[in-house]
Length: 198
Image (cartoon, rainbow, N blue to C red; front, side, top):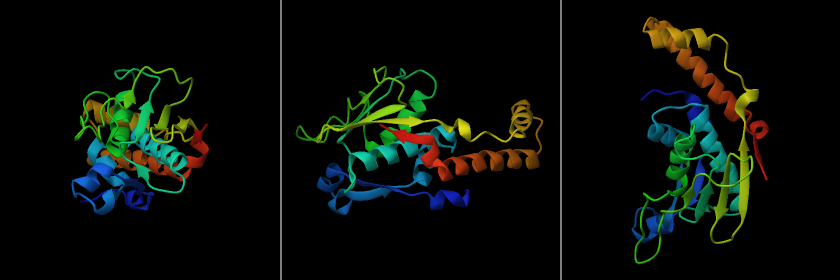
């Protein structure tokens, strides 16, 4: 399997999952999720998937500063409706990491470990990209993601047009993909400038 090597350099998200512990999937329910795993789940790497990963990473560090984030304890709110813009794509990535879903998730085991109804769209959260809350502590953080300061290479637009028209050469397709991932890498490298938490 070949992929951009910077994927391996991205900090993983550390989790503790009580359900995974009970069902014997991971010792103490402890595991980590990498950007590479998220890319596999999404089927691609782009600024939206990157933003969802970074927003979750930053929010969970703020909510669980001295310990692993607890999967199933995290509730997420979005201003946009599910069908609006890229809200669904972002929601899918965050759901993969946190376990939070709207109504489609796990209903629980013996009245515990439910994952459904933990993700909400069309919420009143001002201008934040998303709000993350810990059910156990009641603490919430608003996360803002704006990658506009990392512009795309101007060469990408004409290359994309040629790809969409089916006229791009193999070399042009590879060039476009390389430039696309270069921007993703820059977003990760400059995450402290494009992610903020309140």
